[in-house]
Length: 421
Image (cartoon, rainbow, N blue to C red; front, side):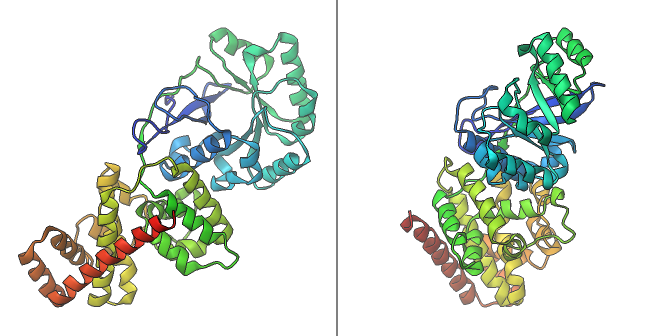
């Protein structure tokens, strides 16, 4: 079987870690994995706000990792706080592979029960975590698919009572904290369907690299999306001005788990595809997860200038319809340096047009000469600037003007961000 994983933050704010522990069936085959929040490289949970833990875990699972890769196409178990459940954050995840776990500490009332009905109605499995034999859980038992029991904590008679409840309400049983062969054999004899614990596998570490991002940019975006009038133009400008947001939005919407027939290949397309409320939920997740990050690096400024320059030159050389593709080429041209991963690997996660993809891979593309002209401007390579300008049929004076305009655009964008803090 594959070992457990871990993904969440440690060391620098650019690193992320979380834990993944397998859940096995009666044949000792993997049924699914529980994703566990970690706020450091140490393989244990350090106390943190529960809402933050849930939001961060979901954000990392969606944006830093392919959720289907995390689960190998099997079930993914994730703990949900009351607030996360009521706000339906689980809708960021695919129903076929997501198990919504309700913590045993949650306050059980009519509002929560209605939220659980919505979970089931939308096609998600529902589990109750760390169950103890308390009467207050009775109203919830008819709604759940799985009951997770801390196996060593119950007596023999209590196990019989739990099995009786499962037979009465029709849910399946999962034995947690199974740490010895004897506990596994006993749980199996009692009729438990699934098993989880150190006897099978301890979580192991996996590090992911996160992009730097401006907290204020997220706040401004949240404010803009939250207004009654959905300002698509303003929202598009804000997202386009942030490499991290652009990358994550396109990766999210082009994820295989969403099973879209047509790729989403621009920020505007992504905004109109999502709509106001789903976009607000998505940005909220990003914002909460990134608030403890670093200030934008110099690479961000370079990307902004390069993106705007490529857009201006592309519109001049080709036409306005090519401007968006040229912007993407400039914006993502340093992505490999930011994430310390090969560009060829990162490109697979984004459904760019052939022209954009080939330009980023430095293959033959009508957009590649424009990117190379931008690089020549940054390096002050005058012979190359002259050669590329002539090849593209654009006067050098226009090239220098476009570059100066791009620097001003980047400066104004970042100044506006700082002024709104």
